[in-house]
Image (cartoon, rainbow, N blue to C red; front, side, top):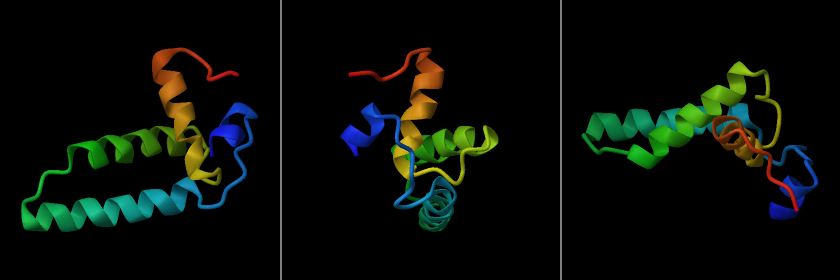
Amino acid sequence: RGPQIIKRDWRPGFTIDLQQKDVRLILDAADQLGVPMLATSLVFNLYRVLQTDGLGAEGNHALVKALEKLAGIEVKQ
């Protein structure tokens, strides 16, 4: 997905909304088993930032937008 990110092409193969649902299911299952999922929890919250910004229909590779927002930068070539 690197070339798509550089071109700022956020067309979905799999949307943020669907990915967020799946990550939530993983976190719920892990919680029931008492398994910590620190990195997965971070990804869940980054997707939440994008959904709050109205970007849930974009491709899950748009996760980079949340990182850009937090860092105050834009990924460029």
